[in-house]
Length: 490
Image (tube, rainbow, N blue to C red; front, side, top):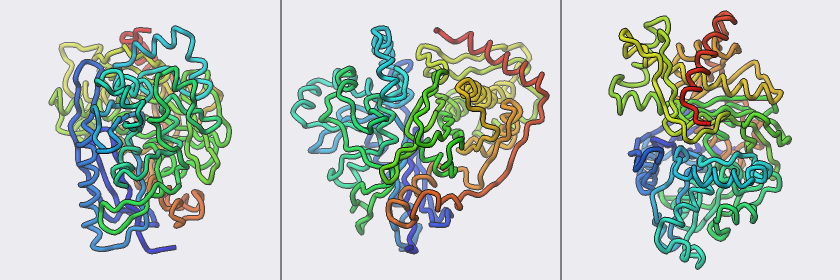
């Protein structure tokens, strides 16, 4: 084993981050930078690909500088999933802004495909539902809207991919056009049973197959980057939620974690079994290592940390997430206020792209504290919906490992345990997405012989046990469901 560190790049929805992580799991150096969110219309969300690249490169350079010459063994990449870029193969320049996973502009198209009876095939082959959340309809939209794009695609002049793929292209100077199985599994055109792009689905979404990248294992050879000086091998890649499962050492069937970032995502390891949900949860690839695929069930919440960001940036009623937590902890309840954060629709188990957010139950005595608490509570209530759906599928976890920025809030995790009625467990390192990318890169570089060897990096910080009476829990969950029903459109 070398004495090097792993440079983990975490390209998220609102910021780019880089961390140098030792093989003992210790964070040695890091840097993070936010970039602008672009909202051209209601329900539309875009990113400037150059801003993504610029902030990701800059944070990596800053992290490397802070290492003072310490050796880097490999690069790992994790990324916001489903967000897509289409770019020119010769220049590397995007032909349109990246369309973000939260974006709902293709809702009418996916609804049309569902009405035509195509959802069964999509679900059978990809494990996903027909929803604008996923990448395929976004790629097709770009090709249709940018003049000449379809003709250029036919001539082989364009490439497409999720953000990991775009970063790998830039990191390798255009030498590698590749993604990993976890990211491919979020496109709605990748057959997760057979591990290949699906010609029928590509035809259905009108996505030319010559645009698409090679799909590799999550721990594999993704080329070499000379951007930062000496050549650095890229050896691990995974979508952020799958990377978080790896960082949480969720290597056994039945292990479940929930990550609270911009959105929130509950992922359950189902092992080699591709388990189908009857409750509109997603079947997806957890990771693929040494040619062996591990599957997962996933529930997707579209707005979690972004709800707090909205209170800060648009409403300007809180300073930051810590302030929201202070306000919430200072009162006993929300006095009947519910905030349903359907800013870009509702995710699992509703999959309602036309729903929009609402603050309900306001009274003359309602305060900023009530709204802040309702915003935080919404993360717990949405998680409860996912666990209820999972229970209908025959899986009822009794412990939930949590991570992400919101998991630093003790008050929220206690409330979450109360509402879920199960134990909530926080690790010492809540940045498990970055840790997971580092672990995969370490495996890909031969620093670890297997994922199981890396399980020792996980360390317990604190456990939260439910204290709320079952009757009160049921009453609060019922009130939340009534609030959600007020914003649902189907």
